[in-house]
Length: 205
Image (cartoon, rainbow, N blue to C red; front, side):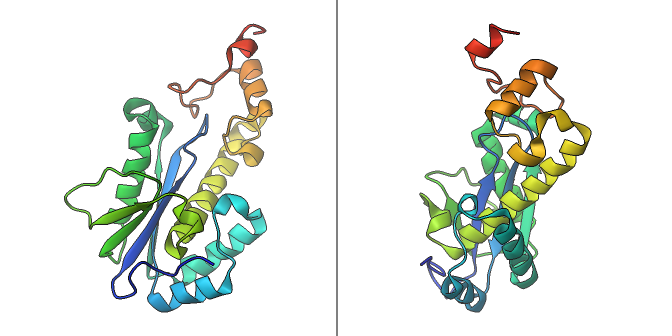
């Protein structure tokens, strides 16, 4: 079972991102502040987990519950253009920092998913947790919001660029996505700093 908090006597924000390994679309981060009571409820309920391990329907239902009951939450997208300028790692950190700054209730401590984070003087102290979205409720909640909001964003882009099937692959490097890139080229939403096609596919262009 996920832990409800690190310290129940302070306001903690869980932070996570989605879309780091994609070929197209933004990297998206969320910060979520939960009350101790609601965090304990979610932990006892036992439905939260790393968002990638849940069905789309379960993620969507949990998103509604989290957004309704969290003390504060924020989701931030960082564009492919900025990713290409500052690299994906820095873009992921930037998205998390911006989400924290935009929270209506400022936390006293940050729980960061992963093994590193680049903070700044205006942010509260933090601790990084490898596989944190499978360990702490607030990080799992942030994972849910980041993934569902990004999937929704990519679904909207799919309407404009249906050949790439972003409603199904969300911009990740699936075989179908790469075949579409080989056939139709890149869109303005692709990350040009990423290796879009393996060499063996380029030979057949």
